[in-house]
Image (cartoon, rainbow, N blue to C red; front, side, top):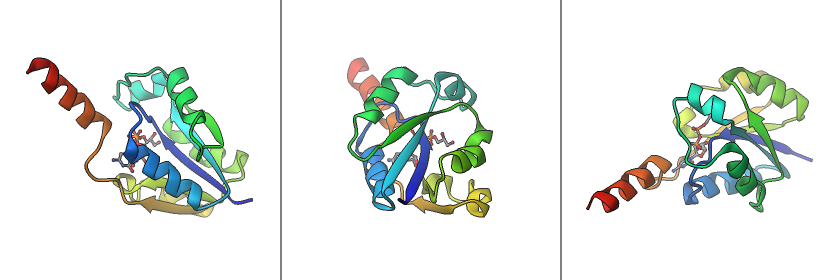
Length: 132
Ligand code: C2G
């Protein structure tokens, strides 16, 4: 059983997120997603539209996702890798290099981000529609 782990806020879930989750799952047999709590989003200076509970429920309904755990701070990744017996850590390549310290514990893979979609772009586009 090859176990994969990834992290994110996954707010206003879109096809870029799904592309990431699908490719992450394809790297193993079991995918755990650590989803940022509302408090941690404040630390990341992100304001999610959906609450942690609702973002968690949405992620748990995705066929590629086997387990969802909370991401409370920047420093939990090594423990998460150990506790969940992770073989592969995956992130989009906007994070390239940032988590190489995990290479002591598991494989670290940065996947190309999906171009043309982002949660902030969705918010900007909707604002434009509303403001005309
Ligand atoms: N992503 C992607 N393509 C996009 C948008 C996002 O591949 N068009 C990927 C990101 O690279 C990330 C994942 O989807 O791997 C989740 O993106 P976010 O919810 O924006 O996550 P982020 O705020 O980057 O949180 O400790 C790590 C952080 O929690 C990552």
